[in-house]
Image 1 (cartoon, protein in one colour):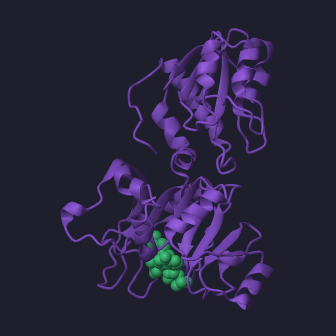
Image 2: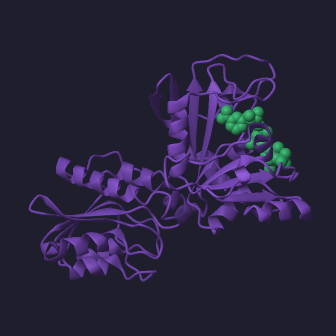
Image 3: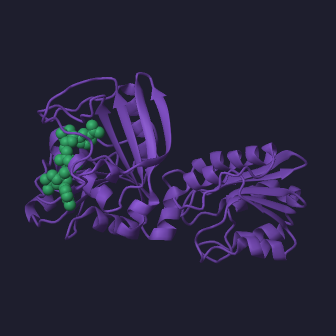
Length: 375
Ligand SMILES: NC(=O)c1ccc[n+]([C@@H]2O[C@H](COP(=O)([O-])OP(=O)(O)OC[C@H]3O[C@@H](n4cnc5c(N)ncnc54)[C@H](OP(=O)(O)O)[C@@H]3O)[C@@H](O)[C@H]2O)c1
């Protein structure tokens, strides 16, 4: 996320519809392309789609190449729509700008410029070859889709989303730590869908011990994010569900050395990495190096507050159930942030909401000015 998002409407309704089609196509690569972006492309001739493609993952051709190949000779004089500026460099594949010029495309309509300086320059190259270029069609949606890629390029960190489920009186568990379930089936399905859009999902050791979650997409998608546990004590029950690795991979990040525990978990296919000091900031740096673009914090309030205070969270997803559980010591979603005055409160931006049967989901962004200088 950056502050260059434009809300100005660019392009005709047809251009916008074609860009939405690009986004739909790009979506098919969800969870599989990182650290590469999600890209979809459409070739249109005389008002009809003659070629389509999306980027399926690293090492595979880019979306534009699939679309141009499908269009064949129909590419001559046609319009190519693509949600991200075509690349202009030799990476795993040759530059797309060159393929577009060779296919003799007349017009290129792109959703957004490439924030990656190494790959950008596609627009200029196309214009130099006499191709008409339009930028910014459905730009907001294009930026949203590739928020993880943009965050990686601009800040060398994955994009962080903090998700929690709470009762109407602001509790994420009862006084004895019981939390299954705060929300109902539709909301939980929405969480599984959100996991499928992420490369990693993070919890702390206490949530493993208290909730024993699977943290998978429960068959809603063939993509499961990497399940990441942050534990300073390394006191984790080896029989926990999260250590069943046949369906999804698990990574334990720990500060404490415990050779026996490590051996037991590794025999179950779990990866164990020591990271010291073990902080949300250090974890995000490490996950960036591993190529992750989007991570979902599903931890409790203690770790969640630290993640927010260290700039590891850009978006909040708050599921709210129409239930009241009470309890003076029952935990809330966010622990100590060190704020004492109401005028210090974090004010979320760009709020959206969804109704999921009886539950609600509020989604908002933490101001860039809050997290940017903490990275
Ligand atoms: N409703 C919901 O959405 C939801 C979601 C998650 C959790 N919960 C509830 O939240 C409660 C647990 O809350 P919690 O805050 O203790 O959650 P947590 O997700 O377990 O986070 C705290 C744990 O993170 C680990 N950790 C590693 N590095 C840390 C660091 N730098 N700073 C802080 N912690 C670090 C520690 O594990 P070790 O102790 O292993 O060292 C610590 O106990 C449970 O009752 C659970 O049911 C509810």
